[in-house]
Image 1 (cartoon, rainbow, N blue to C red):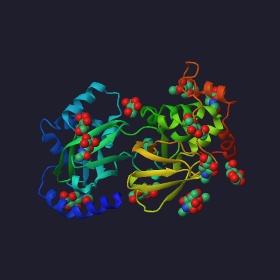
Image 2: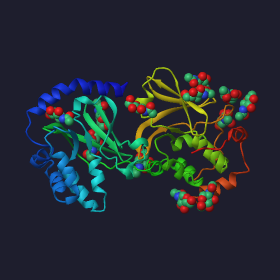
Image 3: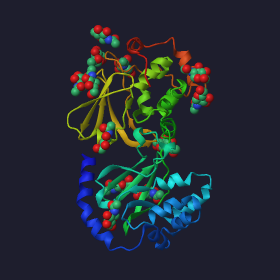
Image 4: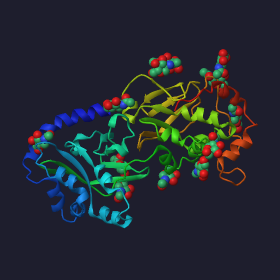
Length: 363
Ligand SMILES: *[C@@H]1O[C@H](CO)[C@@H](O)[C@H](O)[C@H]1NC(C)=O
Ligand SMILES: *[C@@H]1O[C@H](CO)[C@@H](O)[C@H](O)[C@H]1NC(C)=O
Ligand SMILES: *[C@@H]1O[C@H](CO)[C@@H](O)[C@H](O)[C@H]1NC(C)=O
Ligand SMILES: *[C@@H]1O[C@H](CO)[C@@H](O)[C@H](O)[C@H]1NC(C)=O
Ligand SMILES: *[C@@H]1O[C@H](CO)[C@@H](O)[C@H](O)[C@H]1NC(C)=O
Ligand SMILES: *[C@@H]1O[C@H](CO)[C@@H](O)[C@H](O)[C@H]1NC(C)=O
Ligand SMILES: *[C@@H]1O[C@H](CO)[C@@H](O)[C@H](O)[C@H]1NC(C)=O
Ligand SMILES: *[C@@H]1O[C@H](CO)[C@@H](O)[C@H](O)[C@H]1NC(C)=O
Ligand SMILES: *[C@@H]1O[C@H](CO)[C@@H](O)[C@H](O)[C@H]1NC(C)=O
Ligand SMILES: *[C@@H]1O[C@H](CO)[C@@H](O)[C@H](O)[C@H]1NC(C)=O
Ligand SMILES: *[C@@H]1O[C@H](CO)[C@@H](O)[C@H](O)[C@H]1NC(C)=O
Ligand SMILES: *[C@@H]1O[C@H](CO)[C@@H](O)[C@H](O)[C@H]1NC(C)=O
């Protein structure tokens, strides 16, 4: 219910926000300029190049046509960015810091909030229907944080600076927008899953999809489930069982009370339960239940939730014990293809049931 709560609070706050912003005579861009020692370098950066003219025009309005919320990187963050060089896609990065409408800190609900940014031009249209890339805003008693780029977190160091055309929240990092699922999986250190994707040439299958949710098993999960015993199409079958069409953020998965079935790309369902202790996913066998151990990691076409168990797309299977082979230590080489090949003839009994369930995967 977090989405609904967020919207409800937003609606109820609207009146007081308008009352407060009406008393402010600065535009967002002027406000950024006059926060000396805080956001003046961000303003200088925007003013320093003609490529940002459109942005400046937007942020210079009087609010009669549109209001914006800007997560403005502080001077230290902009200085750090300078060290990265001019190589970065700065216009799009800046668009990723701006939301339509006024969103004061009080409008966010406790926990995870998913908000749309202005970054929705063609090159970033991997969500379906021209949906803009979102941001995760996480709120607790300490304040607002923005997790980004797999393991990074930006903190809102000063919230609710009011301008006549919106609101500025100062943050302590420059955010980067989400990247492909396969690179996100790699950066998250989900090595076994990444190797499984890579070894079966499946990265393109998840990267070019529009709007997908991936339940990504961590390396520990693979400790009990050796994909090395499976051939490429069987691995694809297992991977496809962890991918669902549609973008289900954690607020979507908790926005129901009874178990919900989601149909995977492999064809079989998984069952999602919202429990007090978190979100659990049970496979068709009914024997294996995974917990979401980290939720809402954005990709450029959806979201990844890390889970602690490999789900099995077959009714009659149990997890086979790891037969000691894994993707990274076969023959001292990092070749998944080699270890797959070598293990192909040592199938566990499990494999027979998996093989029976292999169907063509329509990625
Ligand atoms: C922007 O906010 C102002 C109040 O600050 C309000 O008068 C105006 O209607 C808003 N504009 C839009 C397009 O929401
Ligand atoms: C709030 O979140 C921050 C960042 O994730 C964390 O360091 C802090 O401990 C949290 N505070 C509470 C009260 O949970
Ligand atoms: C944001 O706050 C968290 C916890 O309070 C801290 O670990 C992290 O380093 C801070 N981020 C930055 C960029 O300073
Ligand atoms: C992100 O964190 C995970 C888990 O702590 C780690 O394995 C991985 O290497 C980290 N990735 C990056 C890019 O730092
Ligand atoms: C992924 O697969 C390609 C060949 O398909 C290979 O060249 C590359 O080294 C692999 N990457 C990793 C990290 O294994
Ligand atoms: C992956 O692609 C490479 C290069 O196109 C090919 O050599 C290899 O056999 C493929 N692997 C699988 C499992 O399809
Ligand atoms: C997730 O929740 C949002 C907000 O309620 C909704 O717009 C979106 O359609 C939901 N996503 C799915 C896949 O149901
Ligand atoms: C799978 O889930 C879909 C969507 O919730 C549902 O319509 C269908 O009946 C389910 N199939 C089975 C076998 O439970
Ligand atoms: C969900 O899936 C389970 C197991 O496949 C099935 O027993 C149940 O009827 C399904 N429920 C719905 C609502 O589709
Ligand atoms: C669960 O696993 C047991 C073996 O441990 C198996 O006999 C049983 O059929 C499995 N249950 C289902 C629903 O597949
Ligand atoms: C896995 O190994 C444990 C002991 O190491 C054993 O108790 C268990 O029965 C084994 N499970 C399977 C499915 O072979
Ligand atoms: C599962 O077991 C049932 C009966 O035990 C059998 O009819 C069915 O074919 C099996 N399914 C698979 C995929 O092995």
